[in-house]
Image 1 (cartoon, rainbow, N blue to C red):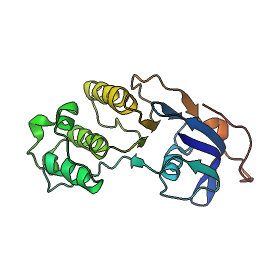
Image 2: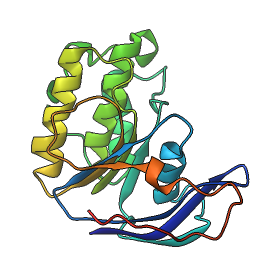
Image 3: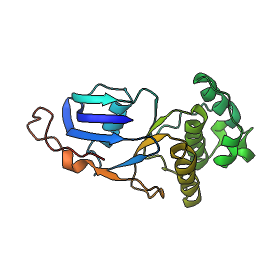
Length: 204
């Protein structure tokens, strides 16, 4: 289980949100909502261990993978080589079914540098399937995807990842077709005086 208690995060020395608390059980997802700049990306980066929290505790995030607007794609490698590289980095062998799942089978031998933005995004998301981490932290994962690709990704997320006992925290304004609660970070906006973390909590 992912457990977040009294979390306060900051960017550039300024507190963004504070008093954020929730529990996330295996097989479930949480959608982060809120206006631009509220702290969704900063919260995800903190959960991923890429920056320390200002206050609070995070447990159960040891097997997390973070995906942001960058696709993590090596342009000189083919689609298959990219996925095999990431799988091996996490001690796994690439399951060729990942290519089919993300509609990449016809592009398997194409250098990633020749892909369109939507194709690169699908490859970046396929990387999440290839590495097999238990907790996915996804920042606007469907950028550059058409409706069919969004639906395909949502189906994989629900059926394969969550259905297999995984978890996901996702910052998105797009409907992914998931039965998942939303947490609006506006309710946890830090005070202008940047007071110590605390305040209201939301348990999901």
